[in-house]
Length: 86
Image (cartoon, rainbow, N blue to C red; front, side):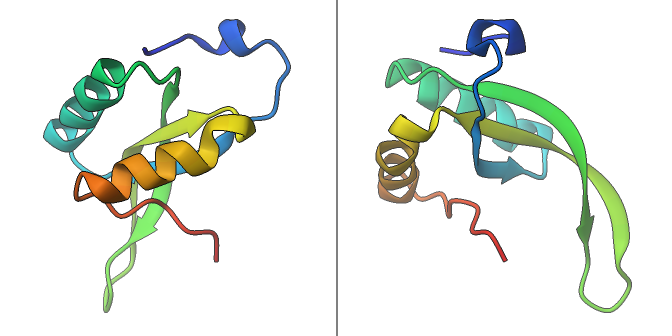
C-alpha cells in the first residue's frame, strides 16, 4: 500500500527499485499494493544512458529495511530487477 513520507516518521528507508517510465511505475504500484507491501514512492533524478549520459527523472520505490529482502524477492519473482547499490 502506498504511503506518504509522514507514515514512516523518521525511519530510514531502503531503496528497492527505480522505475524509469510512468507506465512501469504505475504497474509496480499496483503489484506492490495487491501484495500488501507498504512503500513510499518519490520522484527523483538519476543518470541514464551509455554513450551520452543524461539526467532523468524516475519513480524511486522505498520500503522499511525489515521488509527489504521480501520485497526484493517479490520483485524478482515478478520479472523486475531490484535496484542494486553500486
